[in-house]
Length: 165
Image (cartoon, rainbow, N blue to C red):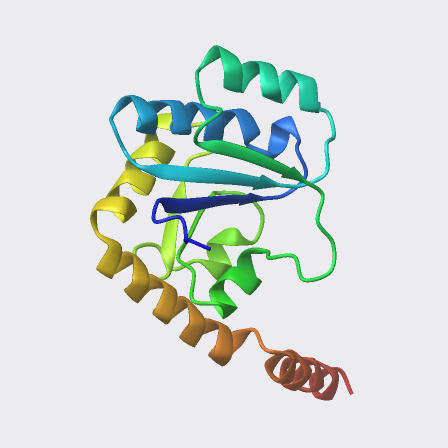
């Protein structure tokens, strides 16, 4: 079996408007128009964005050859911390605790919400600088090992409980 040599992009969340599905699809459209060689994998449960609506967007923007929707996956799903655990550089939007997880320019990038152009620019930069992207993934793995393992969680929980007692 031959491995796909294209740059891989993963969207790992429910297929919801607020999660940035359309923003990433717009960014994919920009990247394809600029001639980048990639595949974007959407993994998540259909929600307020339906499968038919998604497929219609792909057809309208001629993205069927670069975007794949896999639907919901359970079990060993990747999320931001798990991506870091597996040495994958992350690009995410500025929401919730993400800014505490990703170190801008070190373990990945944070882009403004709903800004397809900014997202496309960061993805393109990673495609053009794959060694840097791999280094970010390595640093993300190191950060995960130092800050986000179950052992570190238990140590922090014990510290908090000791302070409360």
